[in-house]
Image (cartoon, rainbow, N blue to C red; front, side, top):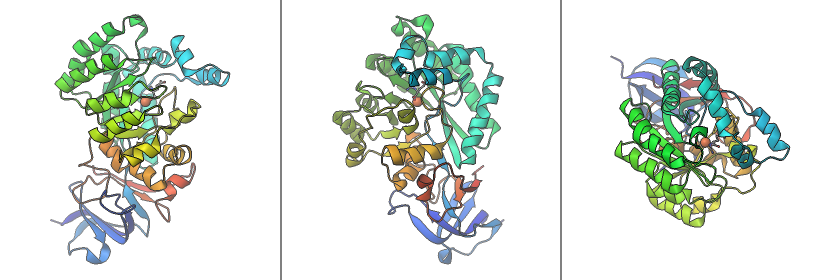
Length: 401
Ligand code: NIG
Ligand code: FE
């Protein structure tokens, strides 16, 4: 039996290992894979003797960990281009939501679609991300907002994972907004989520995590605390849409529940940043939503950096606030709008994105033992991945299984 299933040679490698300086660059490198895991990585001259079932010369290309999109809502019905026009004519996201549009209009469209129709419209979005080098995608529910339709969305997410080589992580986002039939009775809806929906989802193992939207147009901190307590009881990790449009203490709330991540964070206070630093929550930055909503207040990047909060970057692919099915564009926007360095953009879509999904030990860097999801790029240096705009550079996406 061969020592390795695959040997990659004649490569330049950015390991993105946390303890290595910069990109963890290794020139004239080799990488060996066995059983879907990285068995060896380093300078070719130090490669131990061994034989491989398959050898691939990279002809000097750069290898990085395959990209990870740790925040998407890419299963949905319809689109919100009419609201996009309304916003450009002066209406705000909150005004549209209060008038029954916004997330609720996507809920109406999603409820009318069958699982097969949702699957058929979402699959090209998964494929578009894979074509950019993305091997792991998180997908949230949150446009069903009743037991059957939230389960339908999560089942579609699971099917997308089964039908493609991409690893899909499904997140229950039942506390996304109060559905029309519960208008004025948000607490009753939270009862339904805690007493019926969460147990049903956990019993079917349909979700890997639980998310919620903490905002004046969505749910209050006490309501979300109830959802998070139930998630903890069922053994599910939590994460939060926090402080996107106002400071609702979302970062502090997420930290107090040891959330994997707090996402958006435009209005997070210094106290919120401190709380995240202490809890170890990842800050997931979503520049596509910032851009689309015409926000002017940036997340407190300097404070997050200063406190050592890990920074991830995601597409937030959704029809309302981030109609962008591209993680490369999210990296590009994070560098331009939030002034993340190209190194932070790549770490934010590999190592820190893995951490935001609770997968830090499993993937996101090219180190021995990690899952062998590897992207090969036609670039002269990995900093180019945040630099070029709309330029395809993926040579090959090698997947662990
Ligand atoms: O991440 N903030 C709330 N959730 C989504 C938007 C969803 C929508 O508007 O449909 C977000 O921006
Ligand atoms: Fe989101």
